Picture 1 (cartoon, one colour):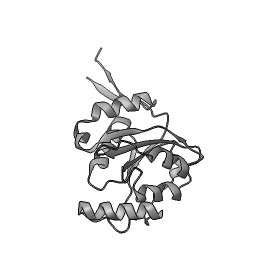
Picture 2: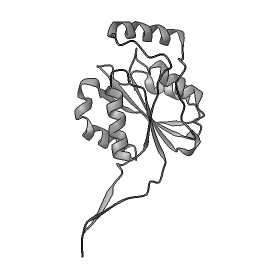
Picture 3: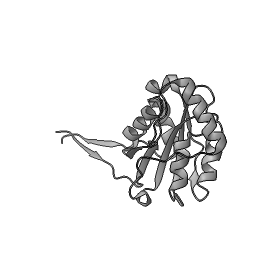
Picture 4: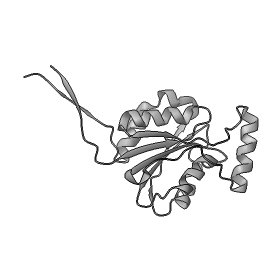
Length: 178
């Protein structure tokens, strides 16, 4: 009989993300599936408009003014996590305002931050440097950019990145019958 056993996790992992179109949510789920980490969706109290042009204008205005929208919920016991994957769409070359709210409202001192950004050609932009400013006492990795149109087929890229940053996918040992 084959038994599956999950290897113990050396670090507690949290995957937080904001997703407007679903692309960032898809990558967050892939990271969860690979690492076994806990998942948390960042949601602003007031949702963003569905219309693309309207959300683009609103995001530009919020980013330019430094606006940080109020969030619906917060992560309970964030201090219990060692590694926090932070996902955002690339809006105007940086993280979405709800992600900036999350990062500035939590004490992430001593945590490892692993950014992942979905985009349509602008890659990471200045997302990493902006995250470093919001988390000055954290270790912030360079991150993973994933083009929006390829999120559904990006599992191999995600797993490769996880290995590169030392967060190898959570593994299952199969024991064969004797």
